[in-house]
Image (cartoon, rainbow, N blue to C red; front, side, top):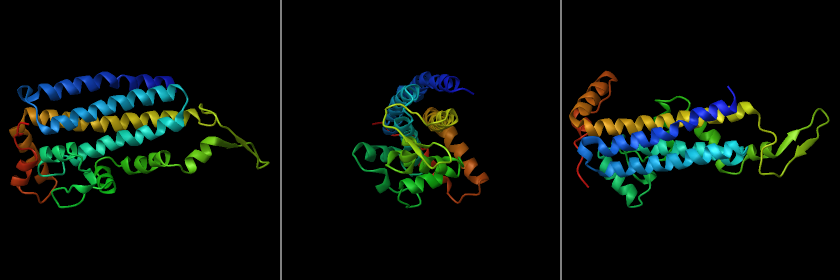
Length: 236
């Protein structure tokens, strides 16, 4: 697959943001709840990141594009946290008030630090931890930036160095891998957004399905806890 073809596939995700946003807003007769605010804010951030990522890849600026994968994964971590608490609407309101996610606890009383959320999400998507730590290396100045600025010139142990705003040493395969990583991360985000839209529109059915899933997985949560997670939302 070429870089251009991979980018074209990713660009198609732009319209999906609007479709899912519309589904969230119209669900349950158009009523609005605290979790809607979080979900819509996340979709807005995701769309901005998508545009920025595509533009930077097209400009051959891998150093600036790579951290955006990490930011997109951050969107997924925050949305996933909303499924780990007893009251997702209260969770969303605390975020709106400025309470960091890392200072909030899930239903098992664990602080929801990034590391904890990464471990949780990796149980569903095995590649998450690897992508999280790999892209974090682009957020902070690290060895990855050394390699982006230099290239070995052969067996004479000499290096070619650069200071430019366009890549010289990044192979196409790495670009394609980054595009696919951004796409896969966005797929996770879409899954969580769709899950909320469905739950909001079908609270009783969603609660029943959750109870059945928890029983199948052999988890110890009671039916009351399941109801607490997917209870009929309270209006803002």
